[in-house]
Length: 120
Image (cartoon, rainbow, N blue to C red; front, side):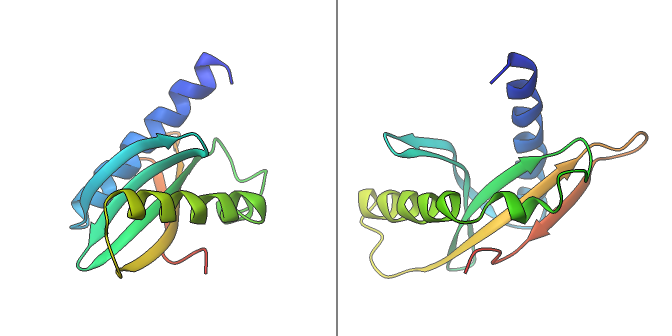
């Protein structure tokens, strides 16, 4: 991944984190990594642990953001969530998987699409 793409993705993750904080969520982890991969944002909303995949897009040309988080990527996110929960001995908790798409606009704030429970 080029440094420009990396910086663009990091910008989108920062916007998504601010959005989640503004909506009342508590951030538990950002860019959490283990040998199996990375989770962009892990947050808590009431009693639910929310694992968020952030997609930063320049346009809608590649379709909806949720389409980028299917199949193998969705299975990997579930495995990472199980690993994160096991490390924290979280026990039986409610878990949700969200996808957040951040897209800059020519003028004004970026567009944010928050798909709650996008991965079932």
